[in-house]
Amino acid sequence: MDDRKRDVIPKSIQLVVGRTGQEYNQRKKRKGAFWEDRYHATAIENGNHLIRCLIYIDLNMVRTGVIAHPSQWPFSGYNEIQNPKRKNVLIHYEKLRKLLSIDSYDLLKQYHRGWVGESLDNVGNNRDEKWTKSIAVGSKGFIEEMRLVLGAMAKGRKGLKAAEGSTSCETLLRLIALILTSRTKI
Image (cartoon, rainbow, N blue to C red; front, side):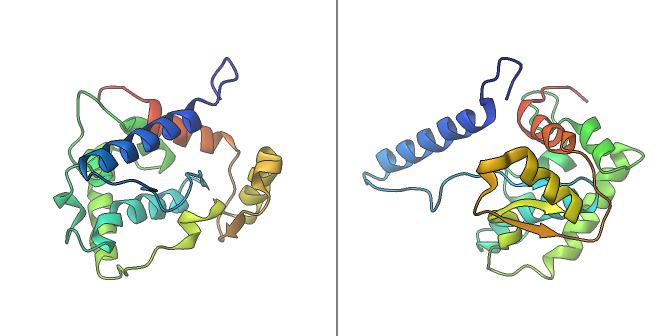
């Protein structure tokens, strides 16, 4: 929610998803559902969990067999991280660096290249439900905190735990701001 209590992110995603489906259907002269399932957000704890999430997203098009390396997909987060833009920026580079506790952006790029390179050998064709169906990914404390914050919206959603320290729900808000709202130049 923004400062006026509006659900800005879900409504923005709904708009983008709806418009994308409509345009595709018009181009292909077809009707019916375009997306497999409704949009949902998964809260990601920072640190190692955020790193694994970034890599999972970077490898989406590799998993589908469309490309062999995420650098080949022009709209990938991989390219945005490796070749930071100065205009139409989607990622707040400095906030990402801080969330990952890395000393410099050049080091972040280097580590990111290495993480993706290591993960390319283990890419399967299946989605990992941890990233696609969970309410939260992180430590047990983080997941429980997200369940409390989300209340009724968390019912029926899975929570997955991992052995790492917990952070506050501000991490989720920072990550959302990092990915969707930042327009800061590097």
